[in-house]
Image 1: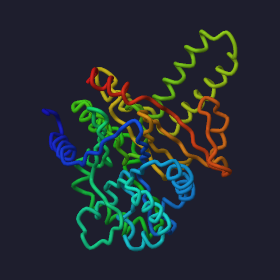
Image 2 (image 1 turned 90 degrees about the horizontal axis):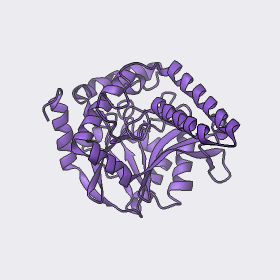
Image 3 (image 1 turned 180 degrees about the horizontal axis):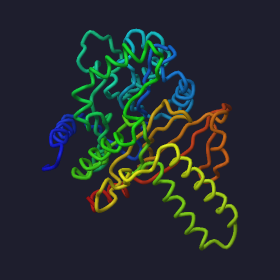
Amino acid sequence: MKVKGKFVYEQLDKLFQEAQTIELSNSDKWVIFSDLHMGEGGSSDDFKTNEDLFTSALEKYYLKNNFGLILNGDVEELQRAKFTKIHSYWKSVIELFKKFDKSGKLIKTIGNHDLELAFNQDLDNPLPTSEAVKLRYEENDIFIFHGHQASKKYQQHNQLVGFTLKYFANPLGIKNYSVSHSSRKQYKIEKIAYHYSAYKKIISIIGHTHRPLFESLHKMERLKFKIEELCRVYATKKSDKEGIKDQIKRLKKEAKSYMKLNGETSYNDSVYNSLFHIPCLFNSGTVIGKRGITCLEIENGHISLIHWFDKNISKKYLKHSEYQPMQLEDSDYYKMTINKDHLDYIFTRVNLLS
């Protein structure tokens, strides 16, 4: 591949070639989470906020419904905390992971914040880990890796980042600062992963940036597409026009809030400067979101972007009739499907448009 940043593309290709391949049928079910950043339980432990929501979703929904679990990197926050202390404090969570592993349905990859798992043989790691994995769906590949591998800088300077977090951020009680706080850095990593995936005619699923992506689109662009779709429906509908108008109004408000919070700039390009929009890149988001948790589900030949939330924090989502949230048993927790599409259709577009 004769492109700028050849080293990174070569590293991604090596990672792809060496990744274990697991066959995926329409009867298989997997859920993909990333970026838990489990610490020692102190004030700078990002995982604490959504821990109960996360474990409730795992135990009461995914384990109960026979899903396999993929933890796609940055599970343990080893740049800020010791492995033994993390596993001691979050023992109940590790035991929950073991339940998936016992049934042969746990895949755990390594991210830049838990990279120590790859080279420190003295760690008593109870869970099998790898750097990447491939799900083979018919004749197509779904490449699952954390995402830091798409950045030469992160691969070369990861140790320095860890030193800064452990000895400066931790004592000051500073929360996790990473690529997730920079739209420009998010875009650079996504762009490399996107072009590599399009070139290989594969689907890639990453984490790392903490920004959910579905079919290579981030939130702002999904909102724009949804508004356009509703405008088309409104023009042809004979009834319930007021309901559709209310939905458009809510989505416009959400889009304006997103722009105000994140800033919409020229580099946030849906197709990453490609001629055609190719739906080859997905991101499961993060478990440590302020308004809940995002993940990806693969079930019955479909892939879905899911948002889990606590109604006491994100009550507004219950009013979004276009999403139809599902309550988790008798709890305050809800599951909401944001986007869903068939893998056959996605791979058709990837193969024909790339």
